[in-house]
Image 1 (cartoon, rainbow, N blue to C red):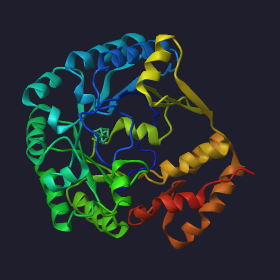
Image 2 (cartoon, helix red, strand yellow; image 1 turned 120 degrees about the vertical axis):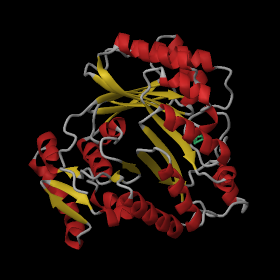
Image 3 (cartoon, helix red, strand yellow; image 1 turned 180 degrees about the vertical axis):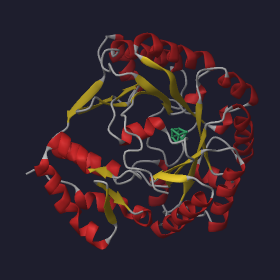
Length: 386
Ligand code: SF4
């Protein structure tokens, strides 16, 4: 599928809200969350205070709101609506923003979905990960296969913009079962799939179990086989792989995530949330108690990193190479000048020669067959500060 490199031209500003609670810890997860829900109300109040404190940080119109985590579906619908109303009151928000809620299958009862469908949330991102109990208990997910199936069945009745998460590369996940997972997904009314390989992050339970010999380490070769099947089968069902790990039908790409990859400004609130104002990144402390304490004092619990030109270009390489739109050479020239464009082209030369990369309409685009090697190719192209 060919999409003009400028397919999404406008950069859309967004707000990300991190809900730092989960029912139980998935063994592979290194996101910030707490399994004790006792401070849920206070954290939510602190998030609301942070939104007000930072209301002048983004003056652009907000076009996307994203509840991520953690597990945002642990919030009840009045809490979700309260946050959305507060955003509307304090920021300039477009009339019909994309509002995504990440949800876990065990939270999506018929009743909850019915209630959610009456809120302004118009996109669900459901963390199914697998339809098989063997995989779900291997990962210590809080739901089982019956809940995975039921949540998808109910959700398709109430929502028409559903994204589903799937994990591949699990050591015990046979090719047959992986194909079955994809077939089940296609049977539901899913317009978008986010699918990532199981990775072993330092200090996670999975890392510990592998070190102790209790769990087998995931193999790159198996992940690559699963990834190829994923590309092939989603392609046959008219999903467009618009980013290495994201597959959407036409009209259903995630606007929020696409804006991240295209370098739009976003405000991230809540513990551990990251923000980008166009030139610098900041991130909140990944600790619920310290976050609340700081917000109570009216102080932002964040660190700021001013990005160098090289950092910004490297980020454009890292994110651009993973998308169907590639790295915009025009953007490099207009933001940083011809010298940097020439440096980038030198770095890219080797991969242009082998045909892994090609230049179309002034965009460096990675061939989908080479997506599995994207991280290595991107780091080959990184500019080093001289
Ligand atoms: S539900 Fe999501 S955020 Fe929570 S532990 Fe599992 S993977 Fe991590």
